[in-house]
Amino acid sequence: MKTVTVSLVNSVFYPASQKGVGKQMLLNAVGLDERILALPDNRVPCVQFSRLLEAATELSGDSNFPIYYGTHVQPASLSTLGYLIYNSPTVRHAYFKALQYNRIVGDGLTYDLHEQAETSTVTVNILDDEMLPYKRFVMEGHFSLTLTMMRQLLRQDVMPEAVYFAHEPPENSDDFEDLFGCKPVFNAKGYHMTFANAILDESIAQANPSLYQMLDQHAAEILKNIDQPDVVSKTVLKHIFELVHSNQATLDAVAERMGLGVRTLQRKLNEEGNSFNGLLSEVKKEIAVRHLTGNRLSISEISYLLGFAEPSVFHRSFKKWTGCTPSDFRRQNAI
Image (cartoon, rainbow, N blue to C red; front, side, top):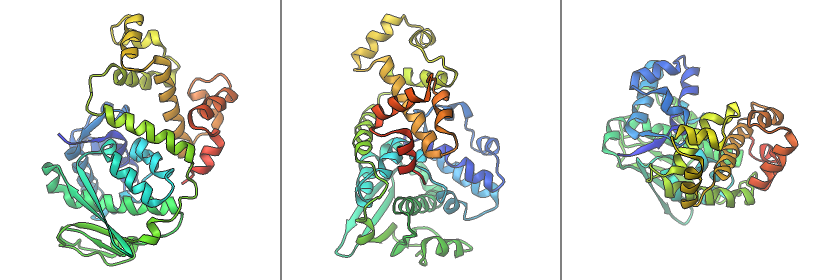
């Protein structure tokens, strides 16, 4: 079964709410349990995400909702891969990292890059047959998301040379032409988007080389564990995420939840090359990165939210994790 990360699923709810469709209404429409979406390591079937886009389109009354959805992408929408992309040296580097680690976000799509002398064409194919009835919603949202990310990376209104969709044209294509800056071709033989090489080779000004290396290693570890749902470390991570905001994420508390003795849990984690404190730091780092990118909470508020006694302790810890201070990270990753 092909799956997507809940980070991508959660990214649908805000744009849907802007169109008057509440979260619970969408959850009911596709039979999703909200508790599944609370833990960032969880995944849901690709077909359920596809149906979510369809439901948001129908309930909003906006037939072009998928491209509206794509314009609201944030790094957190793509989990760790999103932050890796936003810290890549160039757009082309970002694309190849997306190709390398796309299964972190979801494994229902596959990508190819066809490079020519002046342009390069991205081709996207659907791997999961269950997604085919919803291909219009998935592909329109995906192409809109891709273009939006490129514009955020370069902080300029870049345009593709051409866009091709292998489904029927919409009733109103004005939104497509406004977004893509060209008239998309519908009923094409495949799903393609072509860009000038000059755009793909532009540098990403806000990229942090140290953070890029750290995120690259972290993405590799995540990819390695995606097909290992029973490893103890993943279960510990889920419990830490549930407890950290109430400052109750302790070794004793997690061991009790798992029905294990403290020493037994420590031994099992050690066998997997992990430690409880290492996993706790990983969770705090991920939550801190999300809040700093979201720009909604102050650095002091994030510090106390994560259980640090003083903001200065948070500053030191964050610099140890990422190689830069929280304020530098926020400035470099502001969208």
